[in-house]
Amino acid sequence: MHHTSRFLTCLLALLAIPALAADPPTGFEPIFDGKTMDGWHARPHFSPIELAAMEEDARQAKMDQWMADAKKHWTIENGELVNDGQGAYLVTNKDYTDYELMLEYKTVPRADSGICLKGTPQVQIWDYTETKKFLLKANLGSGGLWNNSQGAPGKDPFVLADHPFGEWNQFHITQVGARTTVRLNGKLVVDSAIMENFWDRKSPLFRSGPIELQTHGGEIRWRNLWVRELSPEQANEVLQSHEGQAFTSLFNGEDLSGWQGSVDNYQVVDGAIQCKAGKGGMLLTEKEYSNFIARLEFKLPPGGNNGLAIRSPGEGDPAYAAMCELQVLDSEHPKYAKLDDRQYHGSAYGMSAAHRGYLREAGQWNFQQVTVNGSQITVELNGNVILSTDLSQVSEYMANRPHPGKDRTSGFFGFAGHNDPVSFRNVSIKELP
Image (cartoon, rainbow, N blue to C red):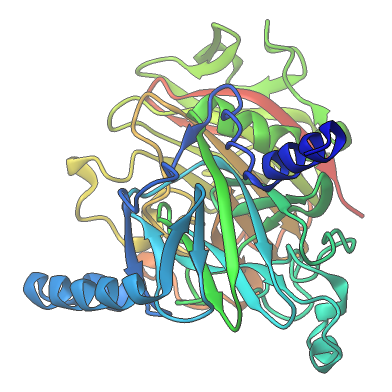
């Protein structure tokens, strides 16, 4: 054989060998070992709420049935997880709360797929050239949060970022709470949008849940699946950084300059405002605000109790004299087991109940964002919307005690201490029209 022909033959043989999987970036761990389905189980399009409600034996039987089905349609080839377009989805055994996910996929024309986050559909993957689906906006490309409501942020990707068929695509997804950011092939397609709970539209996204590889309609290949779990501090940084430049700091981290009210009952400890143990009262901004978004981090001691005064007149009980007091409370502490639902963390005290289950453990820093716009109040805790209420529509009050301040249109913002050393830091605000 001629030397040139031998060289070309060897070169072609080398090119035919699939590239070895890359090493995970620093801090990331593989969730697919390239050889087995260890760490995964199977589930079709099935409500995790319904699954959790089943008796254990029935649930296990159902999962065994789904896994048997999945093994007919999923294979592993050259370090790639391959599905033929049919069968149950593959689901991680592990649940994730705040994390980054990186993966690569390659699919075929007319295929339709996606990535379910926290067991919820889905970051969309589809054929952006299929004209029959242009009415569904397939022409906008992959990466959108397809099951969000029409017109909701994240429903449609910002840009078409798909590579041509036959080429690998890479997703980099960050999810903190329900706040979801999607980059496809290096392009930002979804920016910190709230992922809606497809299974229960009235509730926030599940606090934690698995990652699912959804497939139907055509072959799809997956490789280099990596996850980096985020600590509470890292998660808070992600939330704080989104549009952070639009906010004005209210606290210099050193003293209580710019604050008024019960100043002697508060202190600065390790760069945070802390209510003194056994003390209380309101610590308020010197400026009044009408419509605004406030951001802060807070840390509760076990059983801790405080509150956010919204549009306070500067005197009186903020739960009644102000527009409202938003509870800051270690809700799961045993001593609070029998409260009214409208007294738990994030609730507009005595008027509107917040969703529970999204607080971190006592002693950890939580991130909270409060939007006050007209009579509407939205409370977002650790990336999850736990309260969305229109106080002008509230007509039933705890203990039938009215709230004369609820219709206030402006006032001071601040803290309402209740004898516990609750801490606040990174306090900032953005005024709205």
